[in-house]
Image (tube, rainbow, N blue to C red; front, side):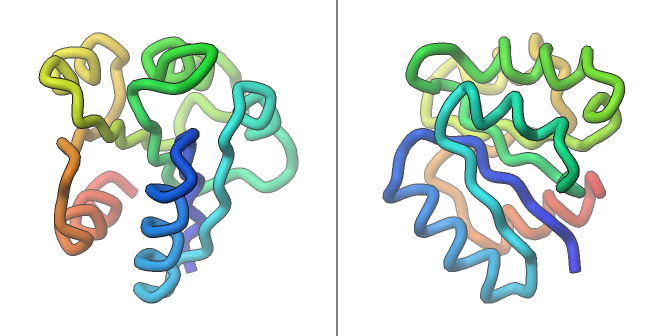
Length: 117
């Protein structure tokens, strides 16, 4: 079973993604704060990180760069999610492994997860 971390501060999106991904057999953990993101380097390392571009208190590009700079998380695939019109370009700048524009189909997301992991 693959472990997915969702980094998003929108409770409704986190709940919907968690419900859908668990139905597909993934183990899901959500992180809603910048301090929680820093905890990713703890013991439970995910197979894939789903990262929102726009987070309260910081942005997804900064989070992606920090995850890439830490030895424990630098090789974890990151898929950036965003409804922002410039999201695809921001994802490229952040150096993530994949990008999905919101809204997206859950099958599209699971295909992307399988492709990067």
